[in-house]
Length: 332
Image: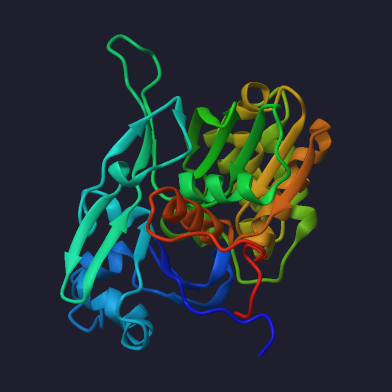
């Protein structure tokens, strides 16, 4: 078949709630992709019915037949699998740091069928007497490497925002991650809708973009009473008959994202340009929230982690690039 490639690498983005695995061919061509719902919490949890009772079993369930057909394939993984609760704790590299992660930076985890190489996370060091604590990321650094590899080379600073459970705002300068900050946006939204009075106020409904826009205005505008006060406003609006209970989830999402943008945009996008990387629909919402601030956004493929893992594997000498192939193209 034209355009096919032999398998060259198993690449995994192994996060808190799920695992994505790619079988990559020449120059990172995606030959196959899988998603499994046993993330780190699923493997380390107390569910006796979970098929993934430990990391080696989980890895085999996700990728075992790929190894059956290609026993010598190297494997590389990023994300929370390298955390203290993961398969093996991988190191953190302190920023500012170069994005060329080499073999000495990887943590090697032996298993019965070979080894898995874990990509290090990144950290902002905390300082005694500093008003703001440090920060950490695991997995997003690999997505950022993939994003930069998919774009034309540039000498200008780049701001990359990765929306999600723990959204990351990152500034890249001279091929180094110069700074980043984490916002617990997605996690706070989940807690509000599952465990607060807002969840009891809400009702099942369809997507309401107008309610999201209204929430953006409440969370992102000045004057504001602050995030916690604006969140409680959702309940008051329902009691006053000004917000349908079915629209509460979208309104709350808008308030939280609007507040995040209002606080982080001035520091992280002085040039009013942002690259968004992640779930397509979530990136669309962030673009919607950034538009009133005059920010030009571009959304990069969600599969950037696969491109980043390939780049790290090449830099570390796990695989060799194949001249003439097209990175990231192939059959899912």
